[in-house]
Image 1 (cartoon, rainbow, N blue to C red):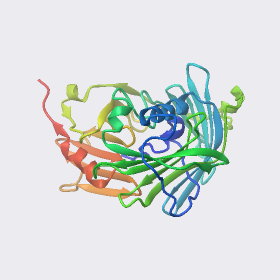
Image 2 (image 1 turned 135 degrees about the horizontal axis):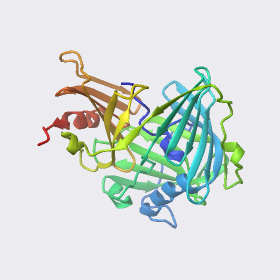
Image 3 (image 1 turned 120 degrees about the vertical axis):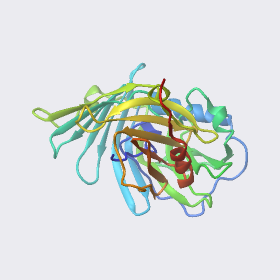
Length: 336
C-alpha cells in the first residue's frame, strides 16, 4: 500500500496536506525551566489544540526535511460548529485539498479527478484525546524559552524533551494571543533538527468569506472517486496491537484502498499526544517470503511485515525502534 504522511502537517489545521518551514537561527535554544509565563504546560497544549481547530487564519506554510522544501497556501475557518479549510500546494504538480467537517476532497487537476474521503476522528496536534495534557507531560519534560518572531509575529518558544528513546523532541513557537502554533521543529536526541514546519506569512482572526473555501478549479466532468471508511474494533476482527508505554489508541477504522471497494485495510491510530503512529492491516495481502522491510526518511519510520495472512505496515514520525515495537506487537487471534 502507499504510505501517507503520518501527520506532522496536522499541527496547523489538523490536515494531512501540506507543510513547512522557515530557516532558524543556528544554535537558537530554549532557555530556562518550567512553563512559559501565565500558562501551565497543560494549558499551553490545550491552547494549541483549540486554536488549530477554532481560530480563523490564512497563510503560507513551508515544510523542510533534509533537502526537500515544499510550500502550501492555507485558509482555515471555524463557523462556531464546524471547521473548514482549503490547502493549495504551491510546488510541483497542482493539487488542492478542501475539508468541511470530516469530509475531505482531494483535487488533482492534471488527472481531472476528485477523491472524497471521510476522515472521521482525526489526530490533531497535539492529539490529547481522552488522556488529556497530563499524560503528555508524563513522557516529555518542558522547558520554556525567550520570545522570537515567526512570520512577523512574536511568539513563545516551548521545547519538549523526551524522557526515553521511544520518541523525538519538539520545539514549538506559539502565538500567545491566539494559541496558534506558528512553527514546529522535530528534534533528534542530539537536538539536531530532523524536520521543520512554519508559517512564512500568517493572518490570524481576519474575516474569511465562503468564496475563499471554494475550489479554484471547475470540477465539471471530473472523475469522482469515493473512498469509504467505517469504525471497527480490531479485537472483533481477531487482531491485537500492543502500544509502547505512553501511547494510547485514538481510533480504529476499516478504510477502502484505491477505487476497489473489495480492497480495504484496517487502520489503528495511536498517539502520545505529540507523536502519531498508524498501524495498517491488509488481510489477504502477502509479502515475499522473509521480506520484512524497514525504512526511515527524516522523522518518518515505516516497518512492513507478514502476520498470518495479512500484510502489516506501521508508519509514524517516531524513531525506527518505536515503529518496530508496534509492528512486532501485532498478533492475530481467531475470533470465537
